[in-house]
Length: 118
Image 1 (tube, helix red, strand yellow):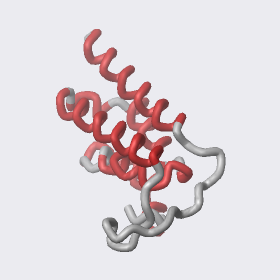
Image 2 (tube, rainbow, N blue to C red):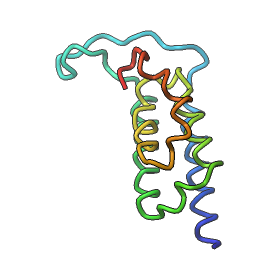
Image 3 (cartoon, rainbow, N blue to C red):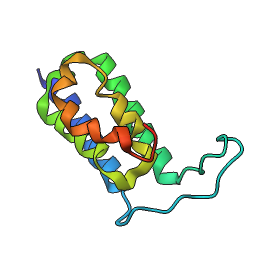
Image 4 (cartoon, rainbow, N blue to C red):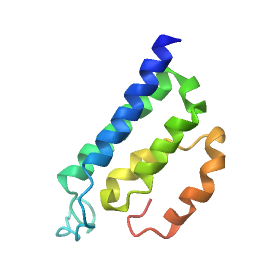
């Protein structure tokens, strides 16, 4: 039980760290890139936040029972809803792609019209 609690704490701390990268104001688009097929370049904080979400995905794969923890899912949602993190949130949205997270659909449905193209 202690290990599960420690894993939950690590995931919540990781979400808090991701949120700490959020600029106070929504940052403007960077110049477009041929490498990204004309899409704007990514800010360094977007890459950092995306990587944090990817690391969380690996933790959840190793401990699937964590997906049932509503405190943890609420924290993931807080990152997803932080618009100033821009595309860095993509990996966090993917964390909610399982049946048990269906109760959060109303909190992420707005992403369908989000300009960041989730």
